[in-house]
Length: 280
Image (cartoon, rainbow, N blue to C red; front, side, top):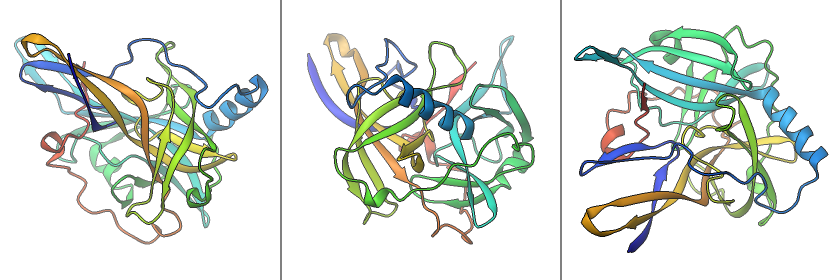
């Protein structure tokens, strides 16, 4: 058996050589990667993160194959924040459905309850900033019940400090659960700035892109990529398993204010290894 390590984007579902690989949550995830954390602290942190997190799912226009209508979707998380009197949603930057393909976007709260349904033009008109790890959207009306998270500075985080991650709750099928990880590297000089984190295997899986990264009760970034181990057996059969190595994009405010998002169509999403979404 041969094993190698490669970097992929969180939530990636792709096919090569006839084999489909998907990170849709097999096995049990561990809730505490950095040691034993008191149950009261976990509960308080979970409540705070739940109150500020939204789930975002994009749906394409669909196509009919035989008698079955295929609808491709792209899923992720966002966090509502407030800066200089304006509310934004901070999320990931690798949505695989372009403006031309987008039929609708559904925004749900942290518990999975639908808050808004926007058509394609309305969703993409919210874009205010885009970099290599983060998309910043103007928060639309209808999110009044979602609390704005306080912003923190990831560049000051000590190595080995604990961070909290908003991830998809695979057991309940909706809502979020909280994972922890520790800081392995802080790269504030990179453009965009990024955090290298280490957690339990399967702590971050498909659909977790954009999930908030929190430290000291403040939002410092969003989940962007993970590292996977590729295991290859005979007959060309391969399996990619998520590891605990996680890359997060640092939150870009205040520098992002006043900038305009560039082309959001991501025409190279498939070839470049971006998330391709799911078929339902």
